[in-house]
Amino acid sequence: MSYWTNLLVVLHVLVALAIIGLVLLQHGKGADMGSGFGGGASSSLFGATGSANFLSRMTAVLATIFFLSSLGLAYMATVKPREGGGVMDRAPATKSEPAKKGEEPTKSVPAPEGKQVPQ
Image (cartoon, rainbow, N blue to C red; front, side, top):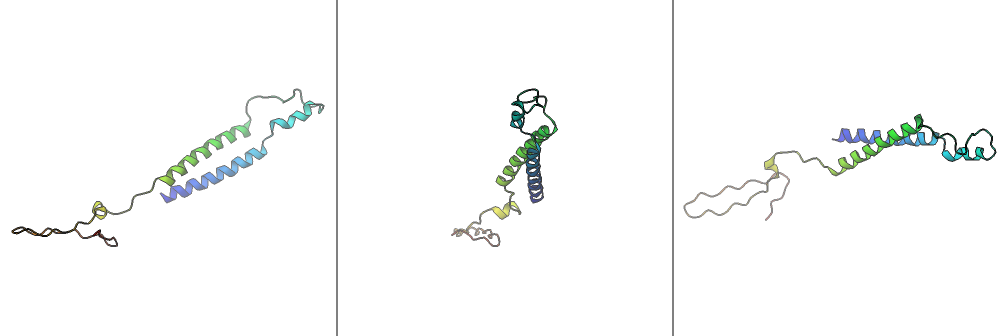
């Protein structure tokens, strides 16, 4: 489980850095507004609003991957793996009862090593 968590953290950080780079490379919508008021080169006030270019599509894909990796990391942080060992290692130790007249004494189960027996 630790291997997958480390891999997901590395992927998460790389995607975050890629999103930062792509957002900084993109051309803002307000940048062409000045050219509409006498800058000369623009044919309309806000420029052509055609289909999304490569940078904005990649930003959307990376944002989706970032969101999914965030959910994966949150899930891995809340789900803890179980301890090793068998079922009998987790069973509470029982105290032996005194034997009644004519009966065999009951045997007590020893507590697992390193654990205290409740009194």
